[in-house]
Length: 59
Image (cartoon, rainbow, N blue to C red; front, side):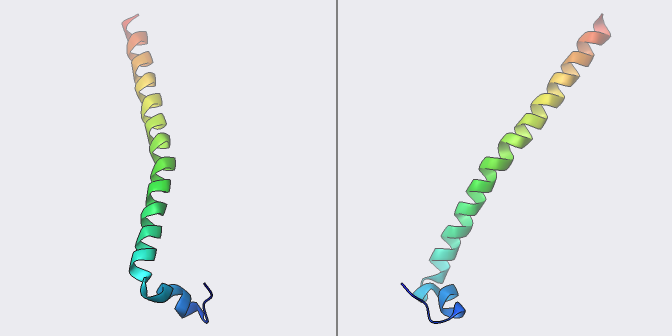
């Protein structure tokens, strides 16, 4: 499929809403797959540090 102009490309032959919403949803899912483990790792590290400090305080 070839487009005559950039605005035709953005319109996607009348299917722009479907095409761009699917593209946006896919991008959100991929970003979530990158960001979620980073946040979980940070949470795990802080919990472990808190546990270590609590155990050192008992000794």
